[in-house]
Amino acid sequence: MPVTTTPYTREMVMIHRVFRREAAQLLRFVSAAEAGDVARARRLARWVREYIGGLHHHHACEDELIWPLLHQRARLHSELVDRMEMQHQALDATLAEVERRLSRWEEAADEDDRTALADAVADHQEVLLEHLYDEEDLVMPMVEEHLTEAEWERVGRAGLENLPKEKVFLALGAILEDATDDERAFFLAKVPPAGRLLWKLVGQRQYRRQMSALRGGVA
Image (tube, rainbow, N blue to C red; front, side):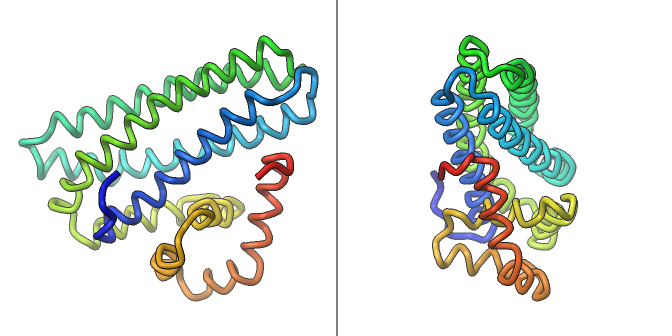
């Protein structure tokens, strides 16, 4: 894990923490789900799909706003950028397999289908952790060298602004859930004042309700 001494790396580590946490929890909760508990399977299926959508959105921002600039400006390290893009493709394949297994499991919460889904989530997690480590350890120093602060801020804005409105508090809450006080202040400073007020008055409670429903009351 890199030392979080710059806004570039600090923000990325906070976002990656979400995917590390959610992938681990999904694997644990799917593996522990009781056979035949269709209601639980369907709650977890909604959570898995939220996770898949969030990861696809995060990677789409990188594919559009980071990798093309690095291909142009860091040509001596183009193999690392190629590696990131190939890892994204590999992750897409694991997510497609998770979704395929998920569709079978949520219908009847069959034990064999649950085991197959848990295996698919475990395979995804393995690929995910390798990618996140490589991105933080190998690629973020290139991002800091070759992207301007304004370009990096554009990546961060796209991460929230391009989300459907009903997903914004879910994303913000996920990022802030395990944040330190300093990290929370750092990230909320990027949110417009009206957004911070809405988060305080409405968003925090909405996030807790959403996660209670998605996790089935298990934190």
